[in-house]
Length: 364
Image (tube, rainbow, N blue to C red; front, side, top):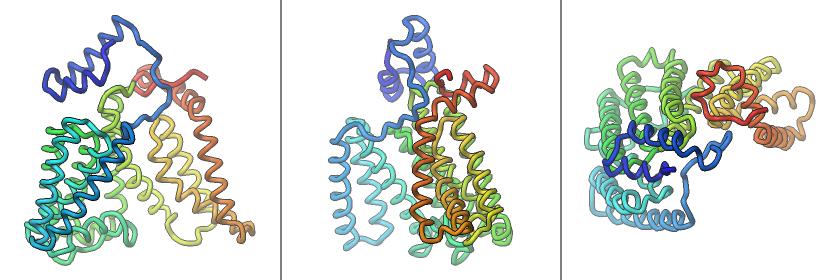
């Protein structure tokens, strides 16, 4: 049977298209049959191929860190950041395009995107530090941290820089096919949308920041599911693209939901804690259904917060911290051990058409 890795390389070299790759895989399974059963309920991630990945990543960090320090002594910040982005692209030509090393490729992509974004924002006239402020404002602060940028010009510069960064991320993906690049580009577009709304309608953002971020998270989750549904056996690069999109969408969805019910406030009562745990159970059901654990990981902090509040209510003040951590650890272990039968129970309740498009599961 032809391997998915060989077809991935064929797509990268332009020998076949993505559609032809999936058709060839389907034909090979039909003619020859599977060599082995597909993995059951495993969320695989091509993150590291060997210790050489760690070794090269250490070298990249040392080399680019020292280079950036020396560049900063002789060039303005914008030019230095642009040069750093160019250097990371150059290193990717060897370690990503030729060696196909997973971890160095992810690190080089992150350096390229962040450097390009900050360089573009400074080139476009944003005040020094505005790009960092925009990143902070997107994720944290009060509620979702949505607040006005220093001025309208800075907001426009940061938004245009984010749009330009998404275009550069698309170019990077066309060249290197690193799965995380799609999530990086989508993140840049989301930042552009948030920043433009912050500048154009600050009152709207102050009143509706949580549902707006929640809507963006749902859109990214839907995009991730589109990649997942197109590759239910998780044999191609699409499953890695979906993983990073799920990782991006999960905190946006989870934090928005719990922010809306007041779970981020200190000292929530028993009723609020019970509501938080009920929402966490729903998130767990969705995670089991789609066989992605990002929603669960994002919600663990809030589940722990709810458990701690309940323990304080019943008088476990001296042992709240360790008992909460113990309970969360036990929950994660039990859920991991029972993931397969739980998925079988949930997926079996769906229609055959939907069940066939989801990742395979073991029978109960």
